[in-house]
Length: 367
Image 1 (tube, helix red, strand yellow):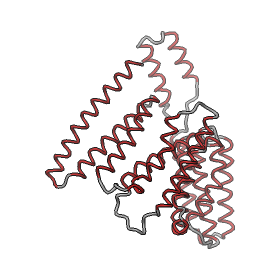
Image 2 (cartoon, helix red, strand yellow):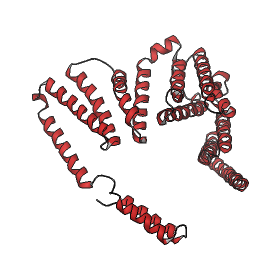
Image 3 (cartoon, helix red, strand yellow):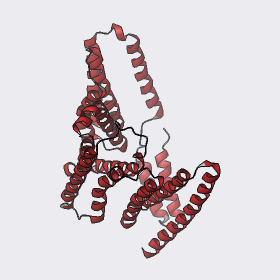
Image 4 (tube, rainbow, N blue to C red):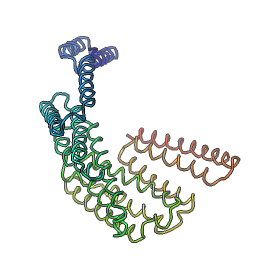
C-alpha cells in the first residue's frame, strides 16, 4: 500500500524547514515520529478482493433466488445486518460500514414487503428506514458522508409523505403549516442535540429557509393554475407558524449563548418575505421579482460581512450579480436587446466586483 498521507506530511515538514519555520533537529524528530506510525488505510488489493467476494456471493444468490425459501432469504439478510452491525460496533471501517448498514436496512425492509406482498407507499418504507437507521447513525457516525446520507433520507421521506398526502393537506389548508413545522423542527435540533448532528440539521434547515425565501421571489411568477396555488389563508398560516416557531427557537438558544439580534430578525422575517409576493401582488413583474431577490441576498451579505464569513459574503454578491444579469435578459426581448442587456449587466458586474474588492481590502486593513 502506498502511504500517500505519510508522503504529504513529510513534504510539509521539508517545506517548513526550508522556510525557516523549524530547524533541522525539529524536522528530524517530526519525520522520525511520522515514520514510526503505521500507515493508515486498507491495502487496495484487500479492498478489491473483498469487493470481488461480495459481488460473487450476490451473483450466486441472485441466480438461485427463486429456489431459496423465504425464511432462509430473510434470515440470511437479518444475519448479514447483524454481522455488519457487530463490525460497526467494533470500529472496523466504521464510517463505510454504517453506510452499508443503512443501505442494507432499507433493502431489508423492501425485502420483507416483497416477500409477504405487503401494500404500502414509498413514504412508509422510508419512514421505517429512518426509524431503524437513525439510532445507530446518530450514535456512531461521525463523518459528513453519513450525515448527508441520513439527511437525504429524511428529505426523501418527508417529500414522499407530503406528495402522498398533498390533497388532504390542501383540503385542510395545512400545506404551509406542514412545511413550516418541518423546517422549525429541524432548526430546533440543537436544543435536543448540542453536537455535530444538531448543528448539521440547524444549518441545513437554515439553508432550506433561505432557498425557499429566495425562490419564492420568482416562483409565484410561474404559470400556475388556480387549482395549483395554495389558498391565501394557507400561506398566511404557514408563514405565521414558521415565524413563531423560529422566534421560539432563537429565544431558547439565546439562553445558552449570547443572542444575535440581526440574525434573529432575518430568520424570523424570512417566512413573511417568502409569502409577500403572493399576498401583496406585483410578482408578475420581472424587475419586482429580481429586486425582491437582490434585497434578500443583500441582507445575507451584510450579515456575512458582520460575522466575518468571507465565503458566504462572496456567494451573496455572486447571487445578486447573477440575478441582475438574468433580469436584464428577462426585461429585454430579441437578440439585439438581449445583447444590450448582457453588456449592461456585465458592466454592472464589473462595478460590483470592484466595489467588493475595495470593501474586502478595507476590511483586511482594519483587521
